[in-house]
Image (cartoon, rainbow over all chains, first blue to last red; front, side, top):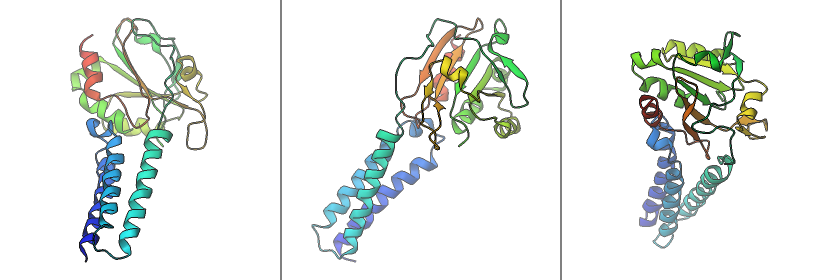
Length: 131
Length: 110
């Protein structure tokens, strides 16, 4: 392989490796909470593939540049646009009681928030479901 | 589920019995409940199928689900024994959730 080819392969490896590593380490909070890192990995991969074109190379180097650039565009769009959740005020304030509610648990039994009052602290997690 | 497991796993056994964890989503969650029980995570999954509670809490993210349906903004609240909010986290990127260690610090500080 020509020198540019190796650089292009390295660029691809950095971009794909960054995405793969993020997915593999989703359970590690410090990794999960820095999704911009996989975008940075794709940016570095794109730069490497671009630099490869300045060295002796063959046509697959262009393919590597196209793939890394598409990955960069895709991951940046996902992280900075699609994954955004609008800020906006909530009706919950630290130091206040949140609205009470009664909701069915997985067996259909109704659970009321106020039933824990005076008994134990409660962690309430709102999440999007198991998809 | 991943972030929920992290939270449950970070609690010691004694702490798990001393704190109630309720996880609210529009899904019915029999599956999640079975999974959490298998892992002894001490979770209660509650179904807010029409998102009425989510809306009342100001946590509705309109048309953001995979099929364009409304979903909650991921949020975590820590309530003390009197039912008062002592710690609150609402994410601005759905990949980002509070670190279980931070949630537990808030619980332990009660």
